[in-house]
Image (cartoon, rainbow, N blue to C red; front, side, top):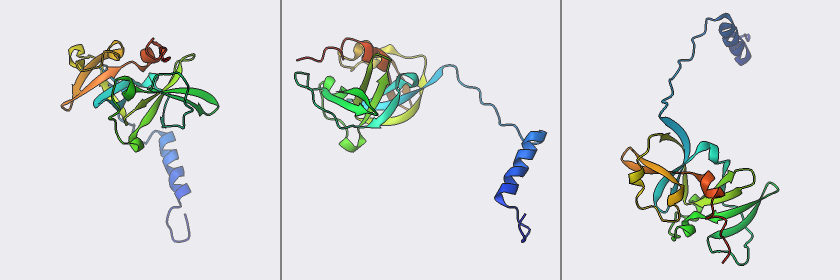
Length: 182
């Protein structure tokens, strides 16, 4: 306590700690997790809202400066140096045949790290963490380009918005991103 009789911040924290240690503090209420839901990274691709499983996206970064590569398809932006590691960057909008994406300041790269398959996927916009329904409606994923269809795990409606689940792991390891030569 100070001379004016008020508690100092340290004394207040020490009192809280003593209350917790003595068992007088209220317990944090437990919230039961919905077993049908999981967390993913939401993003916009070709005007569609997509969700990638959280454990498949290592990080979300701003679009890095890329060194162009000769003799590759136009949707291969090049390679970037990300903390000393080479990151091939692929423009998913260009891959599905459109570059009508969001303004450049909204674009982000999803870094996918599967050990020997490390790449960056340029998307139009990132919405952050999203709750993803486990039970998906595969029929609702109509309108997905034929190139991306093998990587779609289904779709679900949330708040009258269709979200499509995509496996970035299968995309990074699949043949689509391996066939980059012209």
